Length: 350
Ligand SMILES: [Mn+2]
Image 1 (spheres, rainbow, N blue to C red):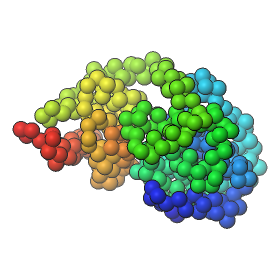
Image 2 (image 1 turned 90 degrees about the vertical axis):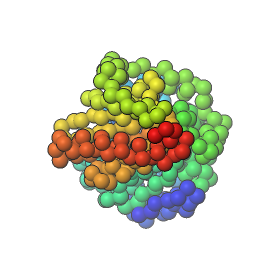
Image 3 (image 1 turned 135 degrees about the vertical axis):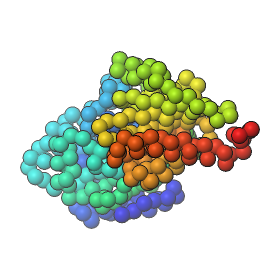
Image 4 (image 1 turned 180 degrees about the vertical axis):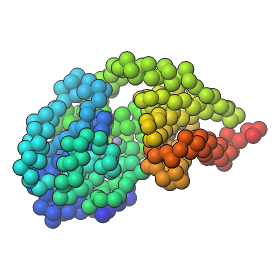
């Protein structure tokens, strides 16, 4: 098991050694449910990288959402359907497989039985991810880097193995990786020097303008549009001095709703989506507050899984009872208020 700091480059060589030591001849790259462009482009980049190193890898994308499908189609990116067929053949023939979870670490997030069975059957389970809230159980190897996207990890991986030629030769892949970074940083809202460095390399080969244009024009489904409007309709607004915090709840599209509320003028948006006993809470912020840290604290206190970045965080909690939900929301508000009070610029007359 290996967790890695920003500057630790040995982890890439360690991972390759680990694959060789475990004789990983067939490697499945599995993206999380409802994969986004970061998960997709990272799978694609890893597939090219592994193939250069003579590993046979295949991509599995569970339930591709409409947004990603639109991007793949308009950009003429590969869908990896042939990979999916080969995966089913491999499973049928009970061949030994190594699995790399891409852009997530918790295999219980996979919903379909067919894919759960494949994961359970794996000889070796590896994860490559950039999220704070990484789980480590069952993983043989974890490549976790505190970057804004998995795409940045994949590009660094190529650099460290002297395989940048993959990007030079594959303009489409470079373009997809640029898109992955744009999506995961909310169009550079959360970018840092590492992000710009990686983009400066990728934009030599890929087309920033083409992927940006495609991403800005992704059509929203009618359900998502209604969710965004309902989210706004059900708002509870609170104010701490000049900071506006809004709360809403919705059946699905909670991330999209939270982003929409920030677009409407909220400084911090908290959106709840409750499915049976599972509460999923998403937070978005455009002010200087560490929502990821706050959500991580809440997740630890209520035995959930959560965390994220400063401006975008999420958590999942299995509720013991209805009352617990109120206490969780209260606690989020309490921590946000404490955090704001600690920052002089928000203190004002409080
Ligand atoms: Mn990601």
